[in-house]
Length: 327
Image (cartoon, rainbow, N blue to C red; front, side, top):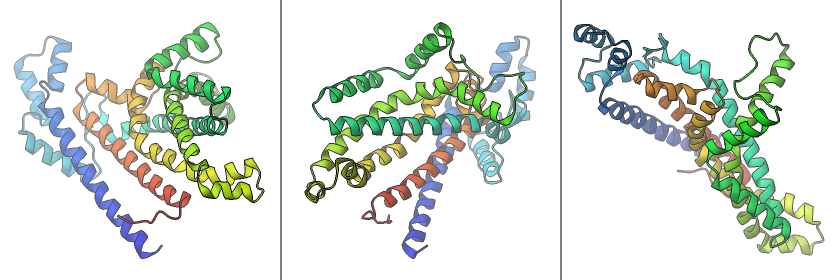
């Protein structure tokens, strides 16, 4: 690893630390500016909790201290690997998130793969047959995908494939209470993930298809493409060997930018399909005012998004050697 790459890594690491610090401080202060806390929620649910007991609970959990003191204790704990304690779930936040994170990562990764593959393929086919019927059909289909909200797509898929056709399960990550071998479990999880992945990826298929089409049309008009045709190379060779690599650059960039949106979309998707992921965990934590859990989810998701974008940067340099690794 040369000096330029090491300097680039150091610079990106510094940027990442600053972003994470801003996420921690900003999220903490915004959440604590919202009226009410966890004790208020507990008091409202039980109905028999007097002011003295509520004060004791606030003192026990440190909620009676000034906000800056609470922030100091929280940051100190994060630096030691402690993301706090979930009042509602009666367990530490980090272990709870780690239990739910695999389901969300599986959903997001599968959605990215499906969206990029199908979207890019559709865009390339449309560009190859520009202004022909197949280009018009693809453009109309992706426009429908783009205009349909994620939750409407999810509900529509459930009604068609689960309720009417009974081909796929309504929700959950796997079928509980059934003894399965490893291969059967993998197949069962894959069957349960079909509808959530489609629900989350259809919107992004439309984005990548339109982006790949525009990028491919621009690349196909370049001089080196005409030179490749003049040398007698076949269309497939020119498209795959010369044009596609450069046309993928905007698509790869968009993947890095939209990872955060995919995590946000996972909240709705996991709620609709009852997936035990981080998105559903954050959704429940918001209604329960479980501040440590909300902050923990934000911090872990921010770390994952930053890591993925760093990987995307290196993939970009591999696709186009002309891009230098620099600040």
